[in-house]
Length: 287
Image (cartoon, rainbow, N blue to C red; front, side, top):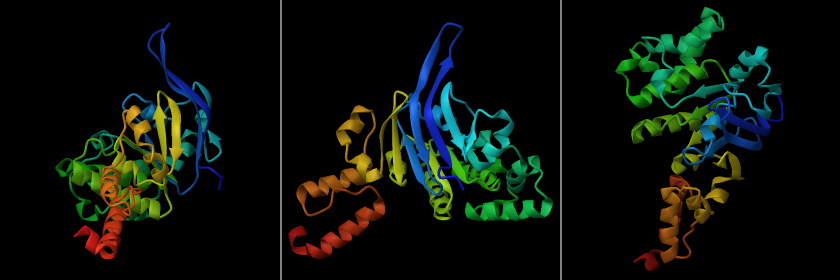
């Protein structure tokens, strides 16, 4: 196993508008992601984060610099299949990834393309549908499913390919809160099983779920750290047209009234635990 599953070295990329005009989107970006990490890439619309995500499994290749996936340079066109077996992608619109008329047939689609034997295919389909909690819907037509359920089917299709890493490119942006929570639960579960998760999002509450956050602005990395490290910089985030999670805002508001209450919280579970501990220790003060 390589030290990094994905490594970017001085990556720059431009979209060509016409023969004489191009727009620079990524500018000298370098970072690496280790196996088992849960990383969120955030930035406002137009910051370059989705273009960056498409470099992580070779959908786009750098204009200059290099992207390495398990030691393979994504510019090696004859090794694209290996790269995409290692790093799967889940996109914004699940309908664009669903190609079959029955759920289990859709999950099987990618496996058939790479010639997985029938017995192995059935095992992988069963396991993938179980992970995303869609086993009971295996015989349903995808168009009868909710948005969150469709996205879980799309995830199952990628998961069945047994990648080491999955990149979620704004995969919850079209979903309602219930659908988003469904997908986030799947992402947490896969990461707890050892899979590397990279999520590209503009939702701070989703970024707070990660172990590490990379902030992109104007095609450059401007912050890289734990959620707690990143969300301490509220003014800088606001200047970048971003915000901090609601949980962090609530914790800070309570801290401003009760200074012994921690303001360094980013997840709902942390807030619940702090409230429980605080009220038991400070019952008289709260009254």
